[in-house]
Image (cartoon, rainbow, N blue to C red):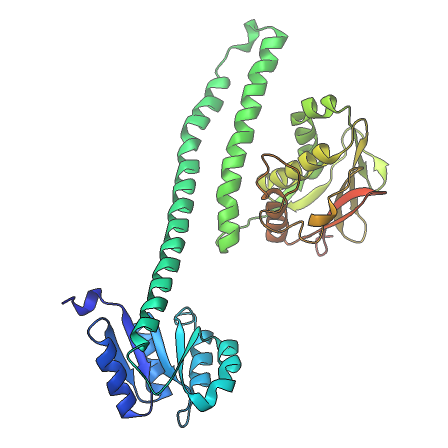
Length: 360
């Protein structure tokens, strides 16, 4: 005999004592059973015990099963509990209503021993779902731990690249050292970025905006993609309020440096990949009525993904694409209080715009 502590919990709710007795006799040898004769008592037991499954009679005085189900589903602590309605044969037409309020199955009266098989099936399904969720949590935890552990050796690489005495190096060697240093910072930023995305998704990211010069960030990003731009013979142009930027121009926006770097780096990378050969990428900055950053390339986004372009795991035609790039762009933009949009057609190409309404 198993101890009650190891057994799954079943709550049975019925205003007829004979039904409670019958159900309890069928289930008590296999589960820890709680019984309630009305909805009020049922809600209290569900809140205190958090059962694994509830068998709930529909027709009860004062508070019927539908209302009990609604209240359970409205409470964060009980909303995940599977509920099976108990109904008389004359109430079969009410099944649709039951599924609408959140039940997972029906058991019809008169109650028979077959109820045990039905309960076992739902308990097995619940256990399987819990195992899947736990496996997902473990995988996400391991990924976060791995990313965190990668930061230490990467920081050592960045620090080492700064220790070289560059006075005796050739220009080519200096350039290589700088590339190592810059690549290290980019990788470190990617690791930090992935950890930050998890915090944004779970609502625990602490956003601390300061004035950030977007032009300076764009210069760094374009330099990092110099090889890719040359390979496709793509030119770029940065416009500030419709004028080509000149030395000393600034475009300050409240935000965080690494968030803007990750956001714009991802969008510019996508623009380079999507752009046809020997075309131009336009980056337009404006702060007239509101702050707007728009990136345009002449390539078109495939029609099949335009409607859900910013959703998670959406990608098309990328052999190694994760489908997280545009999703993370949306997440970062919204974290900083902005909105992101996309317009794409075969004739006009693609423009992705980031807009901040209340910052000017």
